[in-house]
Image (cartoon, rainbow, N blue to C red; front, top):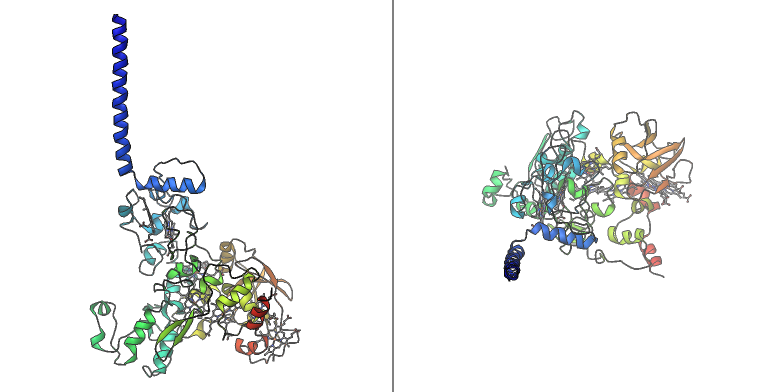
Length: 494
Ligand code: HEC
Ligand code: HEC
Ligand code: HEC
Ligand code: HEC
Ligand code: HEC
Ligand code: HEC
Ligand code: HEC
């Protein structure tokens, strides 16, 4: 009996213990559901989306550049590595973004982010991209991208501002005085302004404390306040936020060109924290120098600016962004509709090639000096690649393994350039790394985005009827313009 009683009481004890454990588990489970860390939800969502097995765990990464652990990827699991030049294992996240590296609470982790979403925004670019040995502080000015971009026409719009103010009699000549952002060049080149002030306002009454703090002056001319407002709100310049609209979604500063946004503004990567339905995100977390025409077009050719009412009117003729146009319209013809306004005139290569196949790093980012005329910065011409009736294109040899052209070819990922290769140069002497003279008199161009290789036809030896002193594109367009409407018409016949 004793044994029975004992076994009974053990059984009873076991039951009580089991019940207690069950109760405890239930309490823990309830508490867990209420206070389950959000990072676990993100990891679960990631596992579900990729079909991988869920293995919820805090993820710590110690980038070699800082030697300090970061927990960001605990939530940002699946985020794409930003680029092969900025490997995750070396950079981590905080080197660029800032943030509280050990926080597992979203708000605390983000409390000290640099520039919110965009660490390359002009307001913070020096602290992020401008760190030692990154994109500033070199003896070779060509590597100081931050200074170059800040002084470039695409950031300051100095030429456009000068032109409008001159047309309205607000200034006596076309010299650049003001920028959409102020600029300064400690070593000004002849013919370039040493500095640009922020755009002025018309009268004292228009000054706010914030404008005074920015050093904004009073011009006394009636157009300035209105021009300032419509210009700075138009979303065209590198420093300004874009219009939140299809085709116009983009970032600011370096990311405006190097971080690609789709026309529909939707994120298509694998980070479960980023809303995939909310328009206004880059396509994936990726920096690139292979910039497709769509990226430049988030600003270029999106509409027309009317001087009469100082307002920007968006193009009415664009098809819905992101949707396939039609089964029988190839990508190049889609581009004809998306990019070119019906009034524009272009040759075949202008719409077949991407903008960066012709417009170089120096044209896009400037050369460091403040530019106040488009002519100063327009250094690639039609004859750069095609030559003239009497001359082949100008060329130069690649001589150094680390010169800019070599760097550009390497960063593209597909560029095949060696010391000893001969490439075309533009009027500034800048080497066009993707246009090679492969055998004497024969030129080939590798397209930077599609990587297709094309033969470049020369004017010399052809039946071209150009005049030697008429090299600007408008002269060429008179004979070589591509008939946009013909293409569209032929494309709509299945
Ligand atoms: C607890 C989870 C969590 C942690 C930890 C976390 N994040 Fe985030 N992060 C998010 C979520 C969720 C979003 C999406 C935007 C939102 O909900 O606020 C986000 C958005 C961002 C954004 C975009 C911000 C914007 O304004 O669009 C950046 C940049 C970012 N995180 C960087 C970091 C960095 C760097 C770290 C580490 C220091 C980090 N995050 C740690 C959850 C987290
Ligand atoms: C080389 C610098 C660099 C590094 C390193 C880097 N990022 Fe970014 N990140 C950027 C830039 C530039 C953007 C562009 C944002 C924009 O303006 O669209 C960005 C965007 C983001 C966004 C916002 C995406 C969106 O569409 O909302 C998140 C989130 C983010 N980064 C998190 C991280 C995390 C987490 C890490 C580390 C795993 C990291 N980043 C590493 C430069 C960097
Ligand atoms: C208006 C567009 C535009 C903007 C804005 C821009 N870039 Fe560029 N960037 C280019 C183009 C075009 C190239 C040349 C790509 C090629 O030919 O392969 C380039 C090349 C580069 C390269 C590689 C070649 C080299 O010169 O070393 C780096 C690095 C670079 N950019 C950094 C930056 C940084 C940093 C910023 C912001 C301060 C920035 N870029 C802003 C268009 C831009
Ligand atoms: C954030 C908006 C924005 C983006 C993105 C942008 N641009 Fe521009 N771009 C401008 C503005 C503003 C001007 C100045 C126009 C003027 O002064 O009339 C300009 C001027 C130019 C010019 C003429 C003057 C010069 O600086 O050479 C060229 C060429 C050019 N852009 C090419 C490009 C290319 C190529 C890209 C893509 C790699 C690009 N742009 C992306 C806004 C932008
Ligand atoms: C086949 C080469 C080529 C391609 C591709 C090309 N351009 Fe150009 N672009 C030129 C040349 C050459 C000029 C100088 C015009 C001249 O000679 O009159 C120019 C001029 C410009 C200007 C200054 C125009 C002005 O108002 O004076 C801008 C802005 C510009 N291009 C932007 C772009 C953009 C954006 C793209 C891509 C959608 C692009 N270009 C594609 C060759 C090209
Ligand atoms: C960066 C080099 C480059 C520049 C700059 C350039 N082109 Fe071209 N061009 C090409 C290439 C490559 C082709 C061959 C296209 C093909 O085979 O589809 C071409 C083809 C042509 C052709 C023959 C095809 C046709 O239309 O029948 C003409 C004409 C032409 N370009 C005119 C121009 C004009 C005008 C400009 C200035 C606005 C210009 N190109 C600027 C690279 C360039
Ligand atoms: C008055 C008309 C006219 C003007 C202006 C003109 N071209 Fe031509 N071009 C022609 C004709 C005609 C041909 C021969 C076409 C053929 O053989 O199919 C030609 C041939 C060419 C070719 C060779 C195309 C090939 O496929 O072999 C190139 C490149 C070219 N032109 C570039 C230019 C450039 C660049 C300009 C401006 C600086 C220009 N042309 C101005 C009429 C003109």
